[in-house]
Length: 279
Image: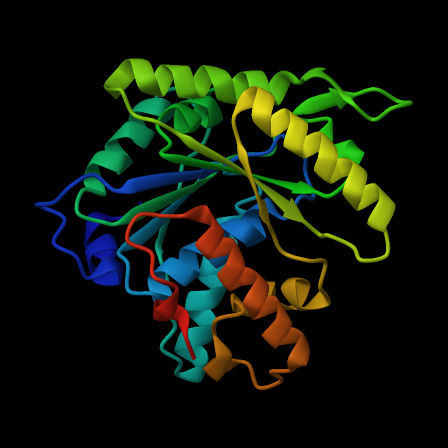
């Protein structure tokens, strides 16, 4: 996760000693689901709450998560803000990448969390990350287009016909993790971009998700709504939690912050206490 000294500086933890971190992997092979935005907000929320947190960006081409946090560091330095920021490193898909991933996780001993943002496509490196996860988060837009990633539905009844390829991929990753060390993996599907204007569609998607959840073993949690503010945050690297740096803080931000708090609480991460994020 970058140079080891940088990790020590950001985390404030003694990494020479300590337990393995809780590994959170965000995965979705379809683009536009808000995966990287969700990853950064979770990472910054954990850093704000005082947890030793680092992030890995496995998409060396787009580097969305890495660029977001680089923008954050630059903005904080330019304007004199103290913005809690996870350490960040990028791992490129190339020979030896899986070994580098394993080494990065060894280096993270003593941190509380490592968040891994996987590419929006199938890759050996992404699969290796999923196999090491304690928590897998799959953000989806609240539509049957995105639902098709994890389950196929009947076109007339909207009943689930069978799990899709990504559900099978997660099943394999969970089985690999259990075989490796007996660990259990919590799979959470985030329903991003819920729209109040599509109540019928939302209800149908919700029913299909509930059926799939029983069949393949995941939980659903409300994600982040479609809001312009998320697109505006990126150049400055800001999040909903950086109230002191948001000069234009508004009621829209208040509602979005409540969504984020509910999202983090819904993940049920070890040691989490919602009071850590109170204003």
